[in-house]
Image 1 (cartoon, rainbow, N blue to C red):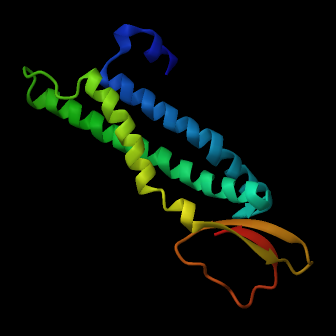
Image 2: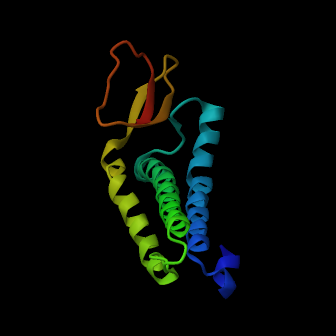
Length: 159
């Protein structure tokens, strides 16, 4: 990303979109990797923080993880459209110029946020009781909260 921003010769449509994908991949590193490490060491969907901080992180982790994937996919689609037009019509000027690309990149991000904004509503923290009496936080995201009547454990779930 730094190379594209500093070198004017790198200011092409494809490089801007690749830098956008690199920025979205950093979101995965910051938000999803720590959550996956916690799941490896504590169990599936376990959450270490409770209260407002735990609830906010529960919602943000899933939100940013899915936004990153959506931004990468949409950026690849724009690159594919740009490259296919260059192959099919090689002598016509490109539709997606670097100035148009600077407008398309924020639109890609806004579209991804709108598509995955439901995570702020669907992600919740739920408490479950373990047979030993300890409380655990468990993270979930779903449109429906499913309760198991036979569960004898207490923990928090991000539902």
